[in-house]
Amino acid sequence: MTEAEPEPQKLLFICSQNKWRSLTAERLFDDHLHYEARSAGTEPGARVRVTAGHIGWAEIIFVMERRHADRIQEKFADALRGKPVVVLRIPDKYQFGDSHLVALLRQKLVEHLALLS
Image (cartoon, rainbow, N blue to C red; front, top):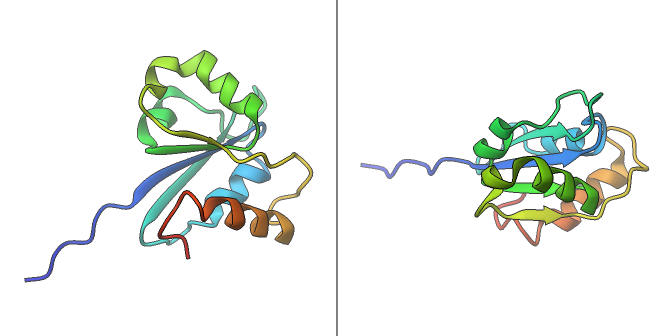
């Protein structure tokens, strides 16, 4: 009898508009065996705006800038209790899928995600 595969770890990526940085990060994990990713934005005009449901779903939350961490802390303090929030410090200067953004994301995420490949 083989042991069942563990459930993928749930990752949430947050930026301002959920159009470039966080969406690019989410796409890095499409079809990944060990991680499941979603993304959202903090601003009213975001493609997908972050909700308490997103926070509740996630096991680890990655934000692109300190201000994103501050915003979600202000709005979702109770839901965030006990959840790690990692500030990646990735500036808003990349387009969706930019190869430099992908490389930077991989470089910063590898120290937090042991099974990143």
